[in-house]
Amino acid sequence: MSCPPVELHKKSEALRANWHAYQGSMRFEQFVEFAISVSSFAGFLDAKALSGLHQVARDLEQQTLNLFGDETSHPITPELMNDLDSRLDSLLSRMDSYIERNAQPKPERRAGAEAQATVGKSVSPSRRIWFFGEQSAKWQDLMQQLRYFGIVVEQGKWEISSEGDEEAIVVLFEIAGLEDTVWAERIRSLRQRFAAGKLIGLGITPDFDSLQTALSAGCDFCLPQATPLPTVMAKILELNDSEEEAPYRVLVVEDSLTATKLIVRSLNESSVESFAIANPSDVLTSLKRYQPDLILMDMYMPGCTGVEAARVIRQHSEFLSIPIVYLSGETDVALQIDALRLGGDHFLTKPFNPVILNAIVRSKIERYRALRRSMFHDSLTGLLNHTSSKQRLDAAINNSSADQQESLSVAMIDIDHFKKVNDTYGHPVGDQIIRSLAWLLKQRLRKSDIVGRYGGEEFMVGLPNTNGTQAYQVLDRIRRDFSQIKHPFNDTWFHTTFSCGIACYPDITNSEALVKAADEALYEAKRAGRNKVIMPSECLTPVAATGV
Image (cartoon, rainbow, N blue to C red; front, side):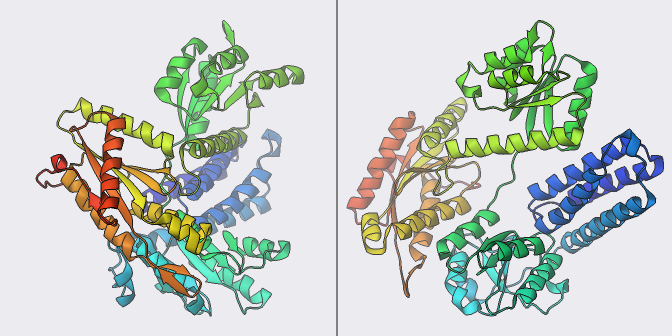
């Protein structure tokens, strides 16, 4: 599962406690606390990829916000109270059931002969997905491809109760041959059975009514009949390999201690970390030290306005894209517009609604992080791009030089005969080969390793705290596994391979020289017949225990 049962239970109990507190006091202030906790809970479930539970929580959130009002609209009527209580009980009951089903360790099931195609690490329950449909035979190529990346597809039956179903990150279903009323009900049934998994519908007609029906029934992603297999593969692997994001971080610039405490408390309720400063002249130092995703700034402070502080911030190129949200009692629209023109991104008037504040903060940060990902990552593979790879390598070398005993290996990888692949099978297939190697590298290497697309069909890999012999063992194993993958094309399939060269720190202490040495070793591998890993003899070291 994507979240420990203990953490889920803690979140559930906090939500339940806030509701009981409102029931006991019937005060508006306590309803605000409950509304914030519901919104935070829905965001938490979404972040943990618990899709089914998130949809139920989102419905509860919408109903809660509809009743937000103000002091004069509370307490709410007994009828509305009972409705909210019923919705909350439904959500928490599903949550309790999910926690109970996933808290008990399940015996590892043998994947059978089909799993023999799986490469690398052994398949675990978290790498298992479900497929429901009457025509599974036509999806065998997809299932075969997924096994190469450690994902086993279980064949599900529509009629079987949910008792025997293990949770999965992804649930695939195909609606071919089913009437509209039948497949919509089937989706609702799957949504009830799988509280966490993302539902991917295959073969759904891409017209408005069909898409609306599927999404309303609980589907997360709708893929039409003609969707290429690589696109389906990419979506499944993206959902299986998604990494948990670091907590959102906000720098609060506010001279009022009372306002600061309220802001920090509201952000904390939504699991957003914050750091507060009272003096705007400290903002540049705080930005460099704290590295926030967003600045929440008062409009008027002693000796400096928020606009003046924003203009100073925007003079620094590294802070040009960071969102700035103003908080102020200023109601003059002309002044608000002027503030936005001079470096701000949003304007909230005091007193602010804490639920709206958190929604704005989270949406701005999501867009900011998406922008940064597009700046630093390759669009085709999701790996680091050329510039980011070099920057990460420089940082790794600096870290290694701080500890003279720490080793580091760099590898350059190039897909063999790639031009022939493009010429024979077409550029879309060539792109799929590049993605396949990227997926395999991401799956088989550590989170601390540097994995980047250096350009075209060439990749760079940096392995901190890894000597040459260890790097050779890891990369040669990946080379063998990649060469075994069957890439489908029309009614047949083909294999492809890669060559690799390795260079080592501290034998070479400069990043550019390391990359050049690894590149030279790569071309030596090409000249030696390809499908090889070459490493200079000076990199050879006795094998030692490592976490690689």
